[in-house]
View (spheres, rainbow, N blue to C red):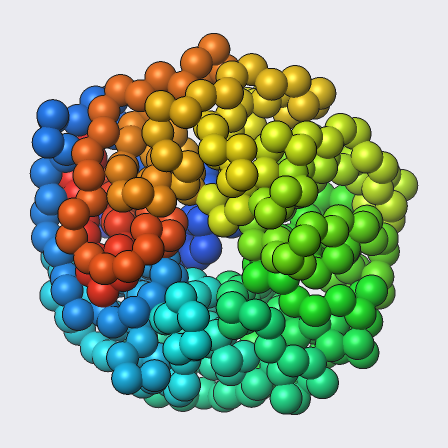
Length: 402
C-alpha cells in the first residue's frame, strides 16, 4: 500500500511539474498547431461560452503568452508599453511598464512575449529588447537592437517575438553588419552576429530548424529568406524574396525538410527544400495566389491552410506540390491556428470561425462575431487547457471550447 501511495505521489508530482512548466509562445510553439484534445467540434449559434473578459490592456496587436499557468500580454497606454499578468480566471496579478512603444501608425504593442526559464523576453516597436523576471516583472537587462547594433526602424515599427535556443536569444536588428544576432539570454551580451544580406528587418519572428546536419535559424528579412548556423552565426544560405513593401511578417512553416515562406503585398508563397544537410536550399514550387499578409499558415498532414491578402480567399494547398485543393471566400481573410482536427480562423472583420480540417472544402462548422475590444482584429488567438483566448485591442476574452 505504501508503494502505491508513493507511486501515486510521484505521478501527481510529475503532473504538477509538467503543468507548472507549460509554456506557450508565439503561435503556440511557432507552428500555429496546438496539442489540445477533447475540444468542441461545433459551437452554439451565438458562440462558445465566454468565461471572462479583461478590458483595459491599451492599444496593441500582440498575442497571449503563457507560462506556469499565467497569461502574459502587452499593451500601450500614453505611449508607454506595459506587461500585464493575469490568471486563467481573468484576474490581474501584476502590471509593469517597460518603456516607450509604437504610437505613429496602427498604434500599440506588436511582438508576443517569449517566456523561458523564469524570464520574460519582448521587443517593443521602438526596438527595445527587454528581459524581465517572470516572478515580479523586475527588469533584468535591456538593450535597443536598433541603436546598439547599427540599424534603423521600419515603417510600422519592429514586430518580432524573440527566439530562444539553449542560452541564445535570437533577433534580427537588420543592420548591415549586425543583421541577425544571438545574445546571451541571461545577460544580453552578444554571442554572435551575422551580416546576412544586409536587409532591414521585415516584421518576421525567427524559426529554429534543429533536425538538419546544420541546425539553423530561418527568418525572412526585407528582401531575402536567410538560414543561419545557430551555433556560429555563419550564413548558410539565402533566397531572394521581394515584394513591393519589404514586409514579410509570417514566420516560415517547416516540415519534411521544406520551408513554406509566405508574403502578402502581391508576392505570394515559395516552398524551399533544405539540401546538403541544411546548408543550401532549392525552390520546390511557388504560388502567387497564396499571399497571406499577416495571417500565417498551418501545416496539417500533407496540406497547408491559410488565407490570402490581395487574393481574398481561404486556401488549402498540397504541401509537396503547391496544387490548390480549394479556394473559397466564405469568410473574410484573417489568421489561422489549428487544434484537434479543426482550424480556428479569426478574420480581420472580427469573425471567429471553426472549420473542419479537410482538403476537400473550406467547411465552416460554427462562427460568431467578436464584438468586444478596439481597433484591428489582428492578434492571433491562443488555445490553452480547453480555453480559446482572443485579444482584440484593449480587451482579452476567454471562451470555453472543451
